[in-house]
Image (cartoon, rainbow, N blue to C red):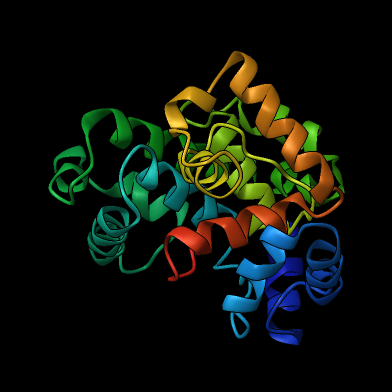
Length: 225
């Protein structure tokens, strides 16, 4: 299963096998990104936990700051000390709301937990799917949109070439470093979105890595899901 595979990978090495190669390639093709990479020499993407944990943490983190998400997540896992899909399903909605989740996020988290409880073997085949196949599969689950599926691709399946165009942190960093401080809101659709895609074309096939370092340029503490 994908969960077992990723746990094994994380034990064998502290970062994805493509990471050093990606750093060299990005530094050579993009001087701006190369400078950011040199400023963060001793950190790299590290996957956190199994597939269910990655998606559950992504749901918790939707539309709130990293700091707030970390706080809510700590309370959720404390309320479910034997962490598993079924333990989440056993908790009262009021218990989860008291952790800082909105009613909508409680529903989303329960739906994710229910899907994992019922479809474990099917979910285990995600590692064999293409990026777009994974996104199509996961977005059938209530509460998981394209952004959440892309975080799963980056942090759980360790896919190297994901460009999360709906991520405000990425858009903010691109505006700051490449577009003279242009606000992220102007890059969310239309011409702005096409411009970000064009800038990111120089990062292929390591757009996940470029995105991760651009996040670091805004917040040195690594984002993990």
